[in-house]
Image (cartoon, rainbow, N blue to C red; front, top):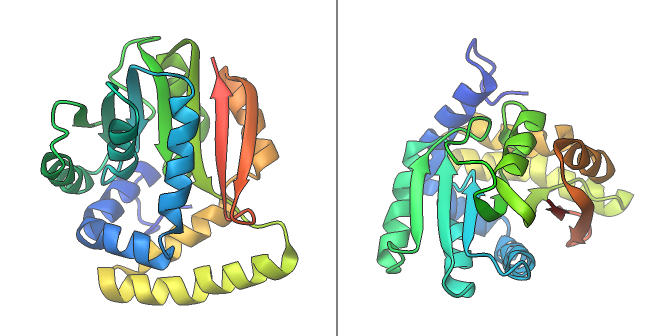
Length: 238
């Protein structure tokens, strides 16, 4: 699915959507998730840190929250953040500069399916809430695998549908009824906040996604459920 259902490609629409909502993205992201997303990111950083990386590629870096968290919590690490949306990167750059991390984090506009990164050049690659927006999910996973050194790790944080029926019903009522109204009112782009929860429903189930990771070249793939299945942390090794 696409955010606006125009003649543009999904990639073009996703870029337009994030350019539109970038000014209010952080406010809505943390408020609508009741800051639970911060806990999930912290756990994702812990997974990355176990690999003792020196160089990390953060794809779909958005406003830089995960890149900043990794630079702060992993000593001496260098992070390259890549994103389609220049407006999101502009927000990220301001945050990185304000935290004095300019020498640890580099932010560049780029395409997850065509990364301007050499083969086997990073120790770890990460994506937080971005893989479901890839134009071609399989191609994006193959690109991540290509960039990671043998023995390196990929860590992907993404939303999923809760398995418990009652909890899933509550979650979907909030996602489909409440979130679009608040998100649309604050961001002035209701379609963006209709697309974002709907795209979770279309994303592969954890078992299927793990299979896609294996086909892309990752091994020892596993998923760690977060908050009753609202999100998953996917881990794979090269």
